[in-house]
Length: 320
Ligand code: BTN
Image (cartoon, rainbow, N blue to C red; front, side, top):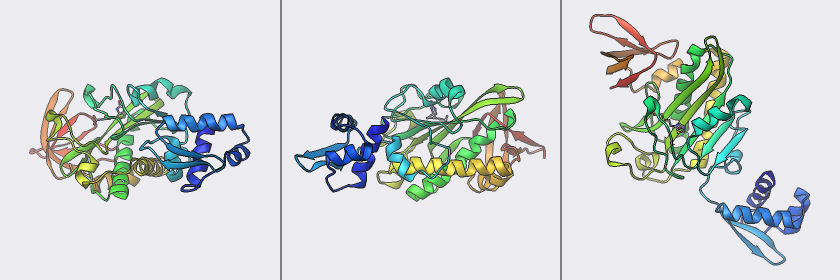
């Protein structure tokens, strides 16, 4: 696998030119047969590679895939996404992340081209079409209190807003706590799950689903869901967006760990679609109706009621 990536990187660096088989063997210190095997593997992954007697190999076309080789040239992180586990198809990246989290380093990132049982909040299904989105989970092992785990959803949310703007120029907003909205419709969702004890976190999995190049949605979702390509009226580069999400996530995550949540709270407020709106909140089977007035120091949504009372909402379903 590593050799295959190295072969690809050399072909990429010589794009438009032939690379001789001998050069590949010499640079990678492997046999011709090993190189030939890698070339065949790359071809079966969708890379179009030409070959010519005495000239060698030439990379003609790269597939739209978000494996590590494609992402790493754009990745500026130290640890987020450096252990990058890539799948063509998986049941759910969050489920897999939870399975392997105990034995995986901090920042391990699982990315799949397709999820067959993608999950959303509240036990909902998350439709994850092949190569049309970014379906990823990040394993984190922060030394924070279990109650603070919810703040990571906000860290992911501000990272997404920035990454979307950087890569697509679209303006998006956070519908507290975990939806990213573009032009009034949901384009991304975040599912943060924790494993720990009362006073200690073992690990947290931040699952992120982005509808990138989804061109149509099932009828029941059409008025609520959208994709970045629909809103931008053009195909979006999933490689750049994936790298930008990871870069921004590491930046905000570090800031959060070093300086505390208050350091990103203003951004949460700035990017919020919920603040200032009348909201209906369902929490612990109770319904609250009021106005969203602030984001608390703990990442909660502060709702003011007609009687002047205020309540910090930490979880639940909020509709605007
Ligand atoms: C929501 O809005 O309800 C949250 C959606 C989260 C979807 C992502 S896709 C990657 C990761 N794996 C899953 O099964 N779910 C999350």
